[in-house]
Length: 260
Image (cartoon, rainbow, N blue to C red; front, side):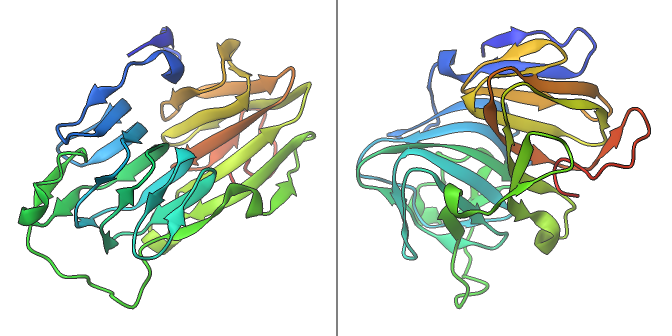
């Protein structure tokens, strides 16, 4: 793993994902660039790549999975998920998926994945195992999916900062948020403290967090309780997962930047 900046007690890690080699998952044709991969819980953050004409196998998500397709496409019985598609698989989602043309995407998994025994044990997922199961809600489609640009972009209380709400985890009984933030040129998000794990991926442009440069394609992990200042000289877009609200360091009562 290529760490651009060591945290030095500051609780901020920056990973250059463009410089990280793909590693094999154990399933032929599926690779990953992992920032976090906990095999005991199935929690994962990083990039996943499918070769053309590779199928995942029938599986059931035991926790929510959120992703953004960065290139290519992935298909299941609901739809074909192409580039710039946001996909949320709620807990209980049961499906198979195939990439006819190949694809790669950024994903955050918040639970294990069960595969039918005949699917080969799901070696392409962290924390996967085999189980015999049925679809708990066959009338419910397996994904909430939409083009990223179709999510409404709203101004925030911070000048030159806008937000797209992509997923509110309260339907999962978790008080988390999945958003896209746009930092317009020459803007700064005032100093604040994160109350829970907060993670980004820079989709375009570049940012600074606590004066650490975060280039395009990098993933940032901010540990709970860390105080940060975020800014961009020339503008950027961040895909962000926040597991809890922020507290403004100056005691201000401004609204939360992640939509809590």
